[in-house]
Image (tube, rainbow, N blue to C red):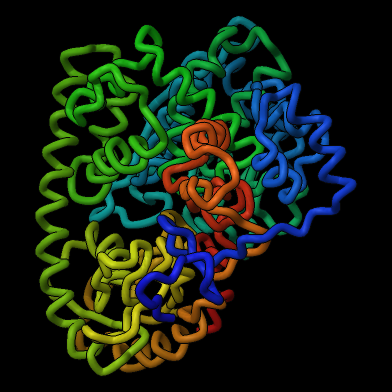
Length: 566
C-alpha cells in the first residue's frame, strides 16, 4: 500500500497506527445504550473524557468496579494464589522445609525473568519462618549459558544432593526438565517447579505450579516466572501471615515488575497491578534495593526522573540479560541480593561493561548477517536462514530477532510509520511495517540442532529462530537445506498485512489532531491508560491499534516442539 502525497493516513483502506505501524480500524462498534450507561458511570466519577469513555466501552470496561480497579489498582485486587493448581502442595512442602530447618536450593534461569525470580525466592526462603524455625538456603543458582545450557543443570543437582539439600525449587525453568528432576528425586530431593512455559509431560516433581499447564483454571495465564514466584510468596503469606515479614510482598514488587516487563508479558489485569506497584516502589529512593540503585546509576537513570517501563525494557533489563548471555550470570543475581553499596556499584559497572561488549558483538553479527542476507532479500525470499561459524551462542538469539525485521527495510521519511518489509528491494512499494510482526517461528525438531527457544527456558517471542550445533557435531551434520525450506514455507502467510490485524476497535491516541478534543488534554488522558502499559506501550496498552491491554495474538514463545509441526 502506497500513500500518495497529501493523503491522510486515515483515508487509506488499511490505516495503520502512526507509531506502531500496525493496521487498525478507526471506528467503534459500541451499542448506544451501553455507551450512555458507561458515560454516567465514568465521566464524572473518574474525570474521563468522552473520547476515552468510548474507548473503554469498546474494550468491555462498562462496570464501575472494573473501571475503578483499572484506574486505581490495588494489591487487594490480586487473584487468589491458591487458584493455581498444586500451589497448596508447594506451600505445604516449603513450610515443612522451614519447620525442619532443611537445606533448600533455588534454581533460576539466565534471563531477567529467571534471575529476578531466583532473587525473589532466595529472599523468600531466607525469611520464611515456621514453628520457630527456618530453612537453610544452600544456594541461589543461575546456570551458565555455555557450560550448562538451557534447563536444570545436572551437575548442580548432583552437587546439591551431595551437600544434603532436600528441597529444590526451580523458577522460570523445570517444566520440561523430566530427566533432571527424576535424577533429583533419585538422589533424595523433592522438587517444586514454579514455571510458565508450556510442557507436554508433567515432570515428576512434588508440585508443578504453572498458569499455562493444560488443566489450568487460573484466570491469568500471562504470569512470567518471577510472577509465579511472587504468587508462591503470596500464598505462603495468606496461609500464615506471620511466616513472612509484614512488608515482604511489597519489598519484592520491584523484581516482579522488572521480570514482567523484560519477559514481554501482557501488562493487563493482575500484571498491570504488579507492574504499577513495582514502579511505585522502584521510584521511592528510600526503598530502592541497593543493587538496582547502582544499576540506575550506570544506566544514567539516577537524575531524578521517574523510572518507566521503557527504562526497564531498554536500559536495565539489557544490562542484566547481558550477564546471562556473555558474562558472569551469577554476578547479576548477587547484584540484586547484596546490601553492600560498594559491592553493588562494582557489580553494576561489570553489568554495564558486559552489555557494552554485547553491543559490539551484536554489531559484528549484524554487519555479517546483513551482508549474507542481501542476495536473498533482493531475490524476494520471505524467510532467511543464516549461518555463522564464530557467532556467540549468547548473541545469535537476539541477532535472529533483530535481523528478522531489518533486511530491506528503509524508513520512508515522507510517511512516518511506513517502511519496507523484508522481501522488498530499494525503490519498491512502501508497506505498513509492524513494530513487532507475528514472525514465523521455526523449530528444526529432533536432530543435531539445538534450538535456543526450547520450552526449557527463554523467550523467543516468535521473533526468529536460532540454533547451535551440539558438541561433537560438525557443520556438515546440520540439515541446513531442510531447515531453510521449512522456514521459507512457513513465513509468507504470517507476513501479509491482514495477518497482522488485531481484534477489536482501535484508535491511535498519540495522534491528537485526529480526535475531537484538544491534543494536550487528550495526551494527559492517554497517560492515564499508558503510564504502566508495558515496555512497548503501543503493543500492550491498546492505545495505538491494539485491543486495550491485549498482547499480540499468536505469540509463539513457550510453545512445545509438537506445536511447530516440523
